[in-house]
Length: 118
Image (cartoon, rainbow, N blue to C red; front, side, top):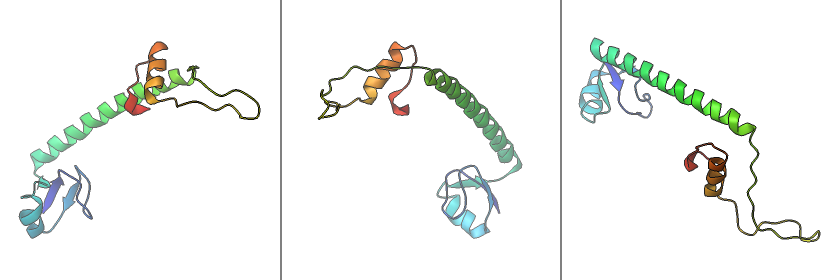
């Protein structure tokens, strides 16, 4: 029995894989648990179209990220912060530089970056 997995199934496959399993396992476990659907001709066509669209979207996201990465590589950011002075103590920060500080610095430089990507 051929099935298209709707979720990752341990020791079987990943989401959107077409797998062959025994009839009982498919009918009694995978399909009722909504982990898989029958791999009919129409379902395979829909899957192929979805995979093609997903690949196109991922390619677009990667291209945008690469452009942003190239722009950021040339960027020099200075974030003022309090630090100790003196040769014996070494220069140490009071506090820390956070993601929000970096996001603000990038925004001042003209780059929109979400803090979850830092």
